[in-house]
Image (cartoon, rainbow over all chains, first blue to last red; front, top):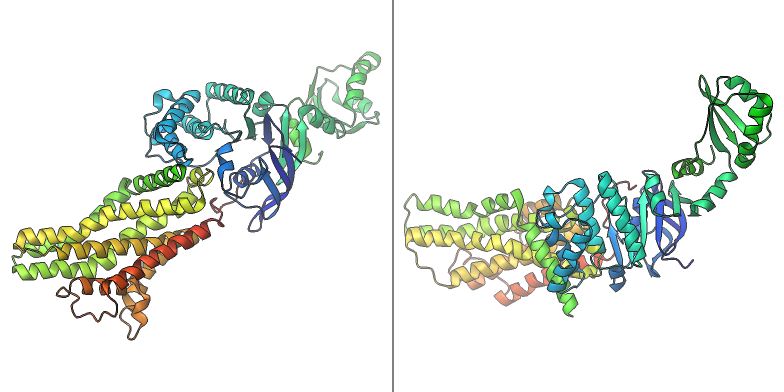
Length: 309
Length: 258
């Protein structure tokens, strides 16, 4: 593996609890979405990458360096944590400037870079206020400012849009795209899948501490197509429709979800969608609506994480 | 080297400012003023000048040095890592290009400076009150000796408590047990056992610097230089040990992570 970040069978335990369980993935250049539900292991992976935690087994490299390590390569990495507190007694400018000084930047350059980063995240007006007075969205943005101020090659963003208002989300998403355009590589975690879907097609899906799928959305859709695909149908005669659909050999199961609704699982969605119109014509059944439950990444994730249930 | 100095000074300044803030600062200032208030209370009874000056110096030996200084240094030192690990602010330092030993050194220097801001006045203000109220003219040797002893106590206790904060979640409790049980009880034991306490070397130092002071009867086996060497050595040992330990410990809070 020769990605920006390479994980090979990485395991991390918290006592009896497995944070990561043989996680293997290669994160390539550009923006990569790390997708998984709460507790999947996303933050554990970020903490390992940030050098806060050490792998119990496996290897994890970041820009070719072991993730558990110190040194100049850390200047090439920026980390925006999800939960971390801030030095609340500092102002925004002070916070970012101080951390740049910790990275070895001279005072004047640190101040200049801090102001530039704060402007990028849209906090210029609030930069001289104490952090304790910042809203959740503003705190998220100042964490992002300290993350990008030293112009790192790789930017790690742990749930960056969590708690940010809709306008802020749009702005941050635009900023992430801009950072990528400018040559930065981003790994962005989220459990809100449509947010990542709008940012990138390159994703790594994680569940129970393991990478369950990796690649672009289309590749993952190919994976999906080898598993039962879920379609919701609405008809005034659901039992008659179910009897007809049950005769198709690629239909795995049929479930009545409401008086006039049924959910069909098929192993061949393409065949299903091709044959459905002819069923209406030849058998005269009425179908009021057809809805694929797999229209977004959320459904894709549910399929993969649930082992195709 | 310039970059390393910038990094070290940034962590030191951050640690110093972070230590001297909030309700904790008010509590520590109030605690540091206790010896001064006691001397002021004694002065209000209009004792003789020598009684007042003796009480000020004696109070330094029995209260300011072993209790006030120790507690102030304990509170400021153990939180340098433990609090920051728990609320995850330490990651803002540990994920940077600064080396981990430099973080330890910066935090030690920052907490040392913060403690000295409180400890030195705690040592000197009672003398000032005694001098003003009783008209005592202290020789310069007295405030110098008390300042040196307070500074060395801060250095040695600071190194030890910083190390404790790195290796134990119960550092505050262990530190209190150490300060009030080990330091106070072991120093009373016969033989060479008291040499296992820091307060022994601090008393040794004071008795050598102030031969006519409250510790004039102390049986000091070391010269002042020897005592200083031991106290500085203890500080260096624990800061170096802390630097080694910090290279290997995880800095995420102990909870199940997502």
